[in-house]
Image 1 (cartoon, rainbow, N blue to C red):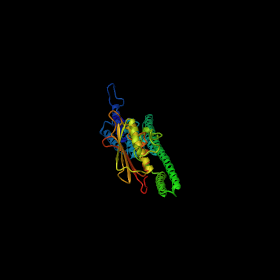
Image 2: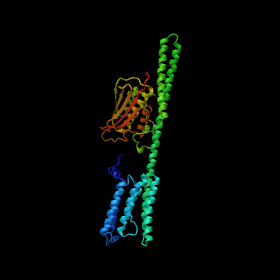
Image 3: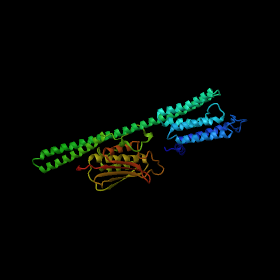
Image 4: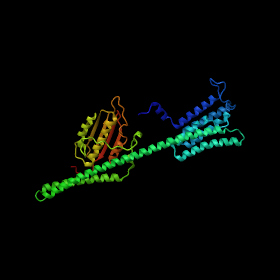
Length: 425
């Protein structure tokens, strides 16, 4: 669900902007208390004589300028901004003829405490709270030591309000930290799950290749004396299968041994999708170890689900190493599944580009949702489909991108380098 325009507006206003709004609201409230409004015989608070003079108005103007300066600093230097707000509150309280800093003059401080507690480290947040509360204590102590009246209970109310603002900020900050940790853990789990799946598929590929080697070796042993040409062909098959399997194992083990932080970089998953990542859906009717040759069957099954898939091939098709063939198919399968489940589109295009003898490129793109259908989490599926595809491409040292199309819709592209020195079967 997208944010409403009002929610987007509130998010666009910076904490410094909210502090300035709070200060303006406090000044307006202070003025209303000192004038007679309809329904009253007299003002709630009689204005002090200083506020009506030029020096009182000058103090309020200076306090406003200091507050605006603090609002400009709040995002970059929050402690300095808080100091500005505290100084402004003392300056503004002076011409009011009051015995304590009023609540209205502390609203900007409350906003700053909330912002600092929500976004800054715990130590800095605690220092900000102590600074704000300490000023109130010092203000009352100075008045008492000077023999003046001090609004102790009013100061306690202002201090309590500042504490509540700080606690609300800490609560939001802790919730944000928890959500970030949950996203990081879920993303890490998605990467681990995808790596385990790749390892299982490689295990099956190796088992299949070893079976071929065993069969060909047995055939060569039986005919090596009577049919040397057939034996030579069997040995060639053994060499090819062995080289392919060894190359795939080297790529897999080398990638799994490397903890590359860039592997999981990219668009963050949907916060609403935080949780255990689900495995990619296996469509019925596909081979146990599919490759790009199974695209026609994938197209048929996807069409039954209501989405037309057009397959375009560039370049002459040529055999691929089993691990690359399988990974390319899995990337297409996951992308098409996301189109079916989340895009709202009624068609998509799969492009297999084999024009470059050193690279295999696959692209899946759709034109966006049909009218009346809203796309859900563009291109992310459960929130971790892209993470799994990116991890699979990283294992093969390829390049991966997933982004909205300029004309609408979404595009997923994977470029997989083809190993040299491997003779395809």
